Image 1: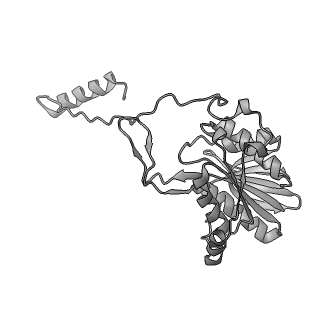
Image 2: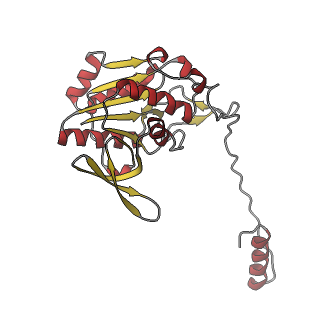
Image 3: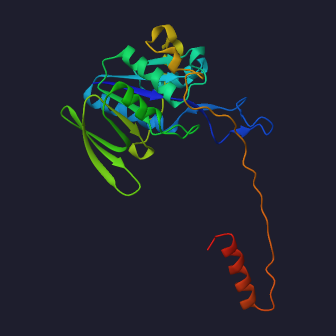
Length: 262
């Protein structure tokens, strides 16, 4: 069974700071990590491969520094890793990103399953995985918390706020993983040495991919961020006056009603 996993390198949000003047992220000195949900996706793929044989291929779209995330994925047990990187891809929104990654997946080909994380912690859109499935015209199941293989089909438990759904889906299909799905393994010492001893990252650039250049990058993105800012936190306090407790309570209730809090 051949499985493709899409991962993203993101800033460690515990360390993120905002430039108060420009409203942009301060990335200098901020460590980057594999997006947490993507690690659950990778672990699910590795478990299925370990049980059924086959190959796990990991794809990441990003700048050259994203090779570090791919080396970590390789050290965890991935068989092949691809970096999709080109200046023409810069500024891509979720639509453009999914367009590019879908083209990379078609370039690699021969897949039975595609795994993505539920969402990236730097954007929280949860859009790229489902969009990839639409571009590839394959079924999708999001928010997977349990996966079982049954012949050529998969039985997936999909988590929602109200209840869990049991869904049967054929190959090929795309699945987005949540943290309840598993506990990602650690990279092995042997895997770490292999990841850094050799140039294991294969790079795909714009000339390698059959994409419409009007549908990618900043100009090809249907959505744009025009402004970002740090929310201002303000605290106001007021002492409720009154001759006795009853009057104070009535005054408080009136104030709460005035601002539609009750």
